[in-house]
Image (cartoon, rainbow over all chains, first blue to last red; front, side, top):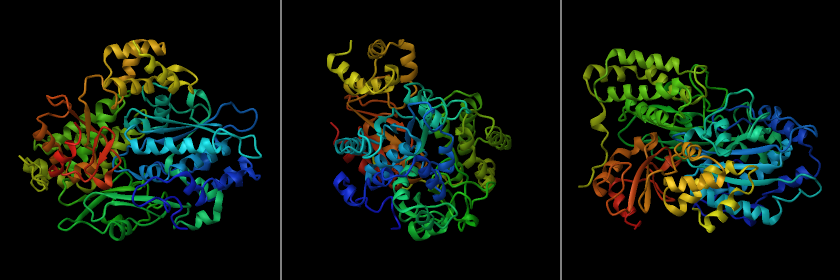
Length: 434
Length: 154
């Protein structure tokens, strides 16, 4: 079984119902847990499997879990929160799972709850994912009706309750502590860390906030073990990864493949290469807040350990391709307008710095920029970096900018010397109908 | 004043929270679904229900993209302007909407039918450009397709 997470998703997009899910092995993991796997054993299994977070940071999941206090003296209640606020530009992998296999999330969260002795779960779903909301609502109702939720696992005292919360928008809700504030009915400003949610989270209780794709791996790890999970990947970390590509490639889409598949294989074999008439210039491997990779990097395995930190990081693994008929300055401008608009406004460098960066990039596209403006961009790429801001939004925003200034600096300079965007005239692919 | 139906729906939606105030965002979305947008009066009704001040609830309402503090048309079109949609032709689709319906982003058609707003990445990047009208998402949108998509929404 090479595609455990997605193999049963209906290609026509029709819903997967409970009886199909169970027939294909769904909820069998709960019997394995109830048959005598203690929570600590389950945590050890997840550690051995080498599961790493697939929300962008790649943090080892078992390590994340290890900070949650356990045992009879631990604070109660404890919470499992699924971070289904997928809004990183270019990223659509969680949507595929939520729409196509909603019971997978329910089963995964029960497992996570069992591992951490947490009896309440929330799915924090972005409000725009209406189809996912409908499918999850149905799946949760079915799971309650069958007793997977709300009733003790047979032979144990453990029971799990699950609630779906559909959000009202804003990218910053994907930041785990901002998400908790939104779930508590407040403005989604991030929280100071430490303390981390594992000890002080939702309503001050121990909480795990976990990405959807990460969670979906859990039933398969329980069912088939850590050796199997390791064998799926080409990397030292286990499992598959849902990769995606968007931009001017022949077959934009998604594929569940071994973790550690190279960028070249994704681009050329699965996405069919660039469309006729355009060439590859670079790609962001994991959504808007990752650094560019260029031709020289295409043979790097796309996993959490093969991309050198001075080059970049995998992020979400859904790639955005820059072609040679698209202006790199315009590309970065689009990204920085997004980040500026989504800044929560709490800390000065982000609130003031990102709009300033966007205005400078606009001046480049309009042919008004000078070399001093280029220096300002370099300065911001440093000063909005890690350690200077309250959360990772602004440092994330600087990753594509800083790498664009490195790899495409000539394009920036040509905007200055020409007094216009050299590519703009090639942008218009469609006529506007009068 | 909240109607009895609204009050019952809010009670039901908020019952699993330890504190009603945690349901501020749910409450705003529920009332907005019934009333179309959140006016000052609606805001104060919700604040009273939750035991919060109007300013507190307004500070929450104005933070979130999907809560409208101004009137909107019968249908709301959200046009994704994030990176993949920008690469694949967002600007031409946007220009077509402006031309066909004589509105700018943030405006409502004169007949009250349609408001068009920008929105951040809709998560349909493999079918960019993407356009969401009410709860329906359309992918691979081109200027040629705009009117046939929108005309379904009366």
